[in-house]
Amino acid sequence: MLLVPVPKEIKIFNEEFYNINESHIIINNINKKEMFFIAKQIQGIINEELKKYFPIIIEKRKTKNTGIIFTQKESLKCEEYILKINSNSIEIIYSKPAGAFYGVMTLKQIISQYGGVLPCLTIQDSPDYQVRGIMIDISRNKIPTMKELFKLIDFMAELKLNQLQLYVEGFSFAYPSFPEVWKDRTPITGQEIMEIDEYCRARHIELVSNHNSFGHMTDWLKRKEFNHLAECPDGYTNSIDNVHRDPGTLNPIDDNSLVLIGKMYDDFLPYFTSSWINVGCDETYELGRGFSKDVCEEKGRGKVYLEFLLKLNKLVQKHGKKMMFWGDIINEYPELIGELPKDIITLEWGYEEEHPFDIRCKQYQKSGIPYYVCPGTSSWESIAGRMNNMKKNLYNAAINGKKNNAMGYLNTDWGGNGHWQYPCVSYPGFIYGAALSWGVEKNEDVDIAEYLNQMVFRDENNRMGQFILDLGNYYLKETKKMFNSTYISKILVTDIEINKFLNVSADIKDMKEEDIESIEEYIEQLERQLDKTNMRCEDANLIYNEFKNTIRFIRHGCKLGKLKLAMDQKEIENKEELLNQMLNDIGVIIVEHQMLWIKRNRIGGLNDSLNQLLKLKNYYYSLL
Image 1 (tube, rainbow, N blue to C red):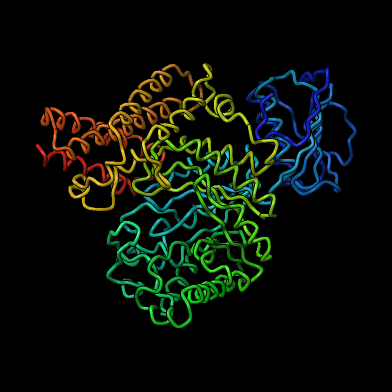
Image 2: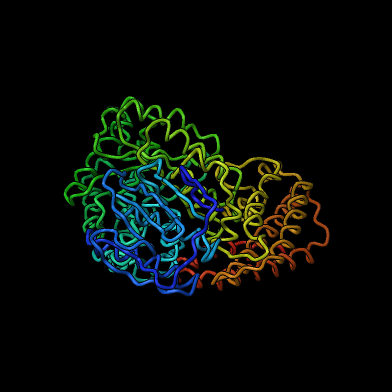
């Protein structure tokens, strides 16, 4: 029996339940609206899987001994449930409707595997983490269609996740006060947020507003009308790679920065029913390097950061909300953590397998500040994922967060540099993170591939799940480990001017031609596995084509790596033939990426996603 998340306790008996034509679904009159929705979920599952119709009836007490019976038991915890499959009835025992809903989600998995003849069993189950969430990036180019967002929410519900955050920076929301900034885009509207919120609440998922409010303000601060609010209006030079960047951080000592954020909150926050907002405030790289330099030198950079954070908290409170924020900057000043208000949540994020969740979680537990652990799916800037890193990162966060009383587990899925990964690349991380946040010990070795095969792709040849996991490990064949990315993806995209990048030899010396050839061989073998899949899910053809283009991306990265090596050694044989082949390949990638993009996402952002590929294409032309 495949159950994800794996339940805390399960006992299977040597009997079977046979579905009965005269069965009912029985609910009581308490929480009738919510329980009716839950009952309709199992009614729909039975209708779809068994082609049977079980009518829903209301009874004050259990009088029938057949069918599916919902029984309320106040002594259970909020999200706890007991599922009993007997020889003549199925009983779901719960305290709150969320528990009943999760019992139905478990029953759904059992019915999908066994049909109308179910094993008799008892399952008692409850989560490790109070909050189990996903954050997806809708600001770096890719904003999904409403259909895709609803599909994601259903996917989350089946995995017993209970929080969703849609990351907003730039112009991915249609601000009524700033129509000029998004008029040429396709942002999410206020009405759409309310529709998403309503869809989430019905499935016991909290839609938490997420709006960066200090750093990551580049799209706003590049505009003439807001540039004066930047800490460094002319931009700054990044000390990590010595590259000059556009301005990205607000000036914290200018009250007009708060006025701007206040207007954004006025436009944005009323559409959410959740009492929480994630205000971001991560990666404020320029802080203390521009307008606030003197104040930072006088008070300390950490103190200036904290003071602005507390001002944001007052803005949030005006809307009757409570604040959460990314903890990377405050972590640099551990002596200030104790000054944080006890009613805000710190988000401890880190995406590498060796991130020090053990140290940070102990620090937050000691401070008494509520916090989440926030690992990631490792999908971004990888094209196909980094599956081994994903599993270790997610487990590291889960085990240390549980040990040190983390309130929540927020699994992040970012975009960045084109947002080239297709949605299914993130699915293994979503599944594993959901399983671990429900029950760490029971789900360490959960079968991700089999869940993908059975519950997601319905692959009759049982290959697709393992194919995705294997494809996402191509990075293990790279010579040098890259932070938060893969080498092949870095070859394809850069923030500096393209012809300069291709003639810089320092980075290519970290890659060997034999390793690139090893990746090419590995990808060729995996493509044969993809062709042997037999998916029966609704979007099977789309998924197949998305992974075909994923393979094209990786292959092109390999070819570009070889070109860079040849340029470094000044030995390019058959230059014109090679460049024409590169042009043909990238032309196919661009056309396919455009076609695949509009199947799941809004058109706004597509040109930004294609920008680097078009730069590469133009560069190849320049070399001919």
